[in-house]
Image (tube, rainbow, N blue to C red; front, side, top):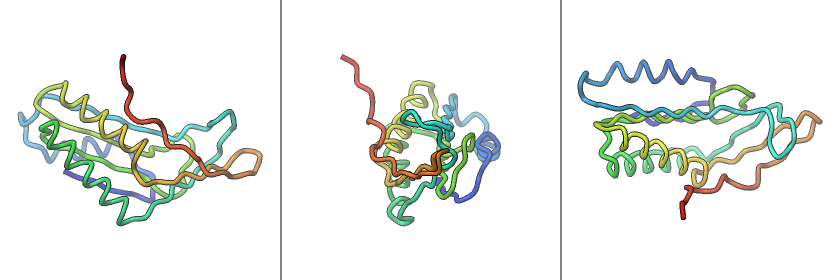
Length: 149
């Protein structure tokens, strides 16, 4: 398992390929990957960049705990999570979640569980720079897991 917080851009697909080389052939039957990138709009405004802040020890512990809980719950073979902090520009990867498991259902469910937690509970704070020159803190995390009625 690898969980990392980076302050510089990364190539998510390169990271997945490189990490998968360390896994034993035949050890897994499914892989699910999510890559979240920065978009250039939010709340009806054009966004030129974003600063993603965190408290390093608290955030790292949250991500490690999340990874272990999800890996145990879904009986994952392995997982890779990389999250950016610092200044981020549109099109750059913010988060990579890759999971490997014996079966596809576990891989999909684990990947979704990790992404939903990252978007709704992980201790990151976003400050957007708008095209008009203003900046603003993003006040609300994305809602948690979807529910069906």
